[in-house]
Image (tube, rainbow, N blue to C red; front, side):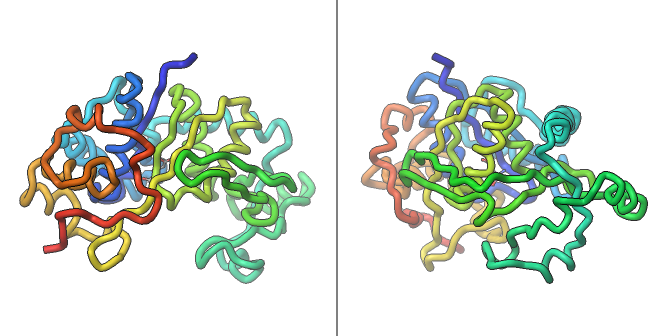
Length: 307
Ligand code: GLU
């Protein structure tokens, strides 16, 4: 049996907020409760949006809260060579094709929607001949897309049960490397989780819909599938989801009002691990942890409100 290995993988495009800390806390407690390893990965693959200063701030904030990790943090911005090797492998096996469509073209061809910003790609560039692709490449750098199968991909989520998605119909061929050369989140996450030996992925429900794409990539690359637990989103007292723009509930503001055990105790109570709010360190929460106690519906903050 592999050693249970969990991770927290923040994108440092802003200061951590309470939703991120809840996620880190549950990921940490789940794996520490089993005596396993916990890793930190800085998801700064979108280099211009994620300055080093913010990555360091995330690390400082996590340490202030009492988190420890078992290996040096991994920075995705330093791993583009690794992602390139896996992209080359998939390209060599015929799973990937260059896409020269501009954003405006993609929006005008949009088929029934996945949301306001995401559209199912209509495979405009999927059947370009190598000569046509070479001609287009003279004037525009392509994005690289993964061809997805006409297949339903399903998995069992630890909290939300069986999930499924028809990749070609509901998602479409997705981007592994952008036209500006930056690697896509899906490829980076799958490669890093596998190479780090991650057995358990705990993350927000907002990423649940990306998981079938990741499972398909894992299958193509021959990686072992980790367990997935997507956690409910954290809402403020007005029922609004917390986000990085909510600076009144990010750590710079919270640290002025609360100690680490006060923050963690409130989050543990919001998640359902304790009945009453009381200050708790991470270590003291480990024996209390049980996924059975964790609520499945959206969570409401206990004892912390906006100023
Ligand atoms: N980097 C993502 C985020 O901060 C999380 C990705 C993951 O946990 O797989 O939302």
